[in-house]
Image (cartoon, rainbow, N blue to C red; front, side, top):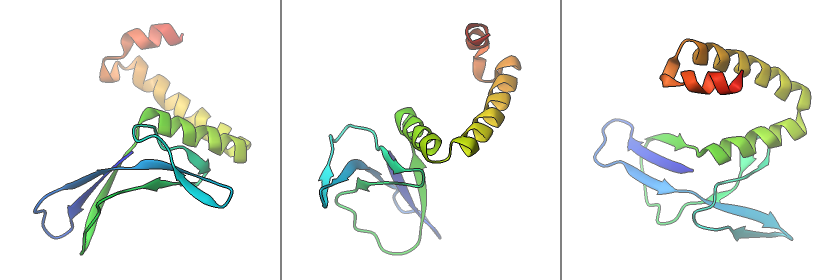
Length: 115
């Protein structure tokens, strides 16, 4: 995951920081591999560390997730709330099917593989 902080009233310089995943076990926080994706520890939170962060003021924050991180969240959500996760995935599947069938993002070939 990457976080980008942009000044709220004016942007002098965007500050982009990679979030390093952290695991909590035996009462301790342990940093995982620097290039590893963040894994969600439950359906609403993930742990990570940002280094060399020195900001003051108000900022717009952009969260950039890797596909593995989104999958990790969805899997965790499905474990904790399976019925809600199925309802969500069913709605998203309909939207994805419509987008693929209309040729959105040039994914016509992907639709044929899915069907």
